[in-house]
Image 1 (cartoon, rainbow, N blue to C red):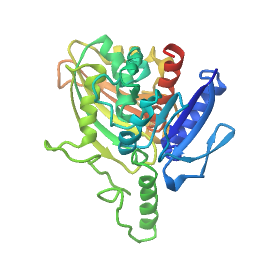
Image 2 (cartoon, rainbow, N blue to C red; image 1 turned 180 degrees about the vertical axis):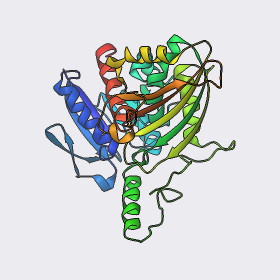
Image 3 (cartoon, one colour; image 1 turned 30 degrees about the vertical axis):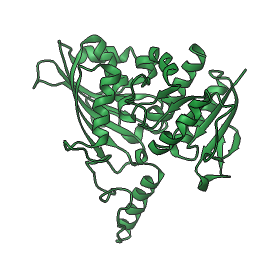
Length: 342
């Protein structure tokens, strides 16, 4: 018997990635699927999206009751999840939600399968599983392994986040501004608060009272929920003129000695669990955002000792934010859910 799955936000970049990976998992017999239904807003009704070799016709989410759906994957943002996830869970549908709406809700599991898959069982509390922030997924996939070797006390993270993290319109803005500049013309920003072409913007999400942005707050609070309340986190999140791929410069302080050779050994042993280390101290022998597009792994480079603290390491962590940072993580959650809990 296969599962009946709905993908909400199917015309967006993450929704399309989810459909593609779902089809791959079905072909590999990791998930048995009866059918997939694609949903989006009114303006996308009737559009076609790919599901492997099939084409699905997009239906309008408005007014849909989710009766007959086993699992719904929400990739449509905070306000859509706020309105429609309760509709789905009310009729017994299990929701995997990519928005931030339920992440910090008590008793809603926030899951990175390689880190805390045992908590997936907690979906029974609300019929909801939350997918973490894209930068958190790639950062903690790496750091949780080091945390097992030496407890992490503090993380200082600087993120370099691509425009795809803000949606297709944001990617279009980067493209159109860049084109205009080469034509000696200007195009005022509409999605971002400043020009994104040939620029970096230290502002993702609304500002909070303490001067942090909501994205920086998410990095702090989601790390605590997943890895441990005792860990201190400070972050600066920056939007950069890149289409796909997020990067993080992470400075990590531990409670006991851990040298760079030990960190490399730990991460090298994790190559079958979604981490690839590419770290040679030569020109170009490190991973950048353009290198990871359509890659499932999280890449680690520039591992080195931080001699300004007693037990510190620096590293550079890069991943495709649309895949492991969102869609792949969602489908991996789904696979474990149906294999071990349903």
